[in-house]
Every structure is written in C-alpha cells, then in structure tokens.
Image (cartoon, rainbow, N blue to C red; front, top):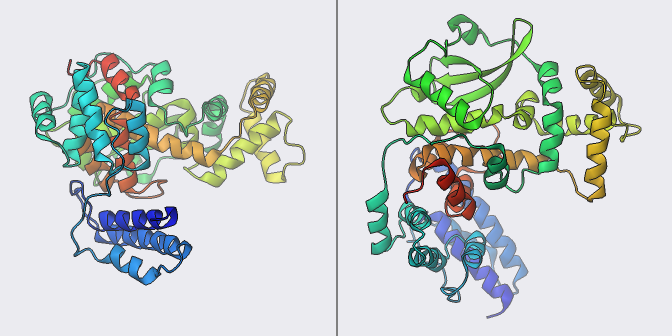
Length: 420
C-alpha cells in the first residue's frame, strides 16, 4: 500500500471513529455538533480521496456519515512499548487512538514506582473506556470523587512553565501585561442592569460556599479580587471589564446553577477557567471584548507607541495615544526595549495563536482545580456559548493529553494533589 493510500485509509478510519465516538458519551449531547463534525471529517476524507488516484469521494463520505456502522479499532501501528515516555506522548499527540502507547506509559510509570503518574494515565484510560484490569484497579484504589483543596498557591513561575499552553507566547504575554491596565481603563463599561439591580456580593462578610470558593481560587491563582454578581439563571461564570465609582473593577458574573450543588468540583472548574482571565496579561483579552481584530489593533498600537510602526492607520494612532495617556512616561521606552529583544530573537508575534493558547491555559487551570476529567468534559460541553477557538471535543482531547504530561505531574506534586 502506498503512502497516499495509507493516509486515505487513515482518514477513513478517523471518520468511522468520529462518527461513532469511541470515548465516553459526554453530557449534554448535541446531535448538530456531531453532524457538523462528521461533515468536517467527510470533507477531509474527500480531500484525501481526491489526492489518491482512483479514489471516489462519495465512498469516503458514506463511511464518514453512516453512524450505524460500529466503530472499529484504529489500525495497529508499529509496537513501541520500549519507547521513552516522550516518544509515546508524541505518538499520542499525532494519533489519540494509539492506545498501545497509552498502556506503555502506564507500564513505564508503574514499573518506575511513579505512582501518581501511573494513576493519571490510568484515570485518562478509564475516562476513554480503554483501561485494562490493572489500570482500572489502580484508578479505583486512588480515585477520590470529591473536591480537594490544593495546599499552596500556583506560583507565577509554575504557571508559566508547567501550565501555559505553548501557543501562549511569553513575549506577547509580556506586551499585553504591560498594557492591560491602560486597556482596562480605555474600554471599561458600566455594569449591565441586572448586576446593578441585584448588587454585588460582600465577599468579606459572605459565608456562602460560593464566596468561600471564589476567595479560595483567588488565592490559588494570586489574582485580584473581583466584584461578584449573581445571575438569575445559567450555569456559566464569566469575567467582565466593568467600572465602578469612576475606576476599573473587574466583575465576575456567576450563574445561579453554578453556585448550587453539593459537589464543588464543577464550581471549581468554572471558577478556575473564568478567574484565570483575571491574570493581568490575560485580562487584556477581556478588555477588548475577546475580539481578535481588537487584540491585533492593540498589538499594533503598542508598536506605534514604541515608535516602531511608522505610517500606522489613523485609528491605530488614535488608540496608541489613548493608551499612552494612561501609562507612565517611561512606558514607550520600555516597550521599545521589549520589542527590540523580540525582534533580535527573530520571534513572530501572532495574536490569534496567543489567544487560542490562553483559552487552553484557562481550561488547564480549571482541570487542576477540579481534578476530574469527567467534570471537565461535562463543563466544556455545556459552555459552548459565544466564540471559542476549539470544539468541545478538541478541548477535551487537549485536557486529556495535558493530564498525562510531565508538566501536569509536577503541578500536582507541588500543589499536594499527587496520590503518592
């Protein structure tokens, strides 16, 4: 079989797998989402078929959309059970169905007496419904289906080294962090009427579970304390760039459903994901209404402030002046030095990639706090409102892969979540 034919068959196999999802059924099943996914895979199968001589797109489309056919196992890849953990993770990143590498990772960590790492791999396999007996037994032994608090805050260094997604470029994080206060003042908005009518929660005096959890997540993430407002309905949690008494006061809107229930893990996930946006560089994306055109405009205005974007359009020049008026006098010079270092390193600045990385980072923080893949999958499926860079399935896959990474193991050990 030629390389092209192998690739075509691989796409067909992926189509069959996606058409009948082999993992656990995610709560909040949305048939239209699955239909769209099947159409996407079908179109890719057609593209692959077009590249292979003699292949007919119609046949590929049928295999992609016929969900009555049972899912079959992925074609067996070359056995790499003796590979390093890095090699196995590379295979899993390229092909999430490479379950021999998943099992090899478990065997490696179990054999090295790295019990927490073995548990994390076993937990992922149980979640994917691919666990063997020994993996299921280890998961059953150490899995705790209740909320657990971490023992110490998530340090800035650990956040950047072990939690940030690689797409969240640290150079851009620095640029946006330097300019976020000015952007917050520039775009701060009055509170919506529902928030003004209800009034904000008194976190200092409120002894409710919600107030305690918000203060807990604030301390873990080492971010500023937001104004908190309950919404009459909904299960979501979101951050809003608001003004109060003539000053910027980040607001946290919490749906009533999110604030109820005995299991604190969903609330921990929701608060962790949202409150990660209170981290100053991330707050820039909140300030610009999570708009990519606005984020790109801010980046260009920063270059104009530094005197590096000669001939910028009038709207960018106006924005640069408005931001500069809200910043210290030495700010343009500091920006110029930062951009000089970036250019010396030949480093491209991609605002869209950075924002995508931010979204994944926020969900990683949420997973760390909730410490449960099932809870994470349920929340991700339910929160599909507004703009998102990833589909629910892709985000869950990102979290599953992160949950078996060395970075995740390091964070768990540092925060006191490791099982041993």
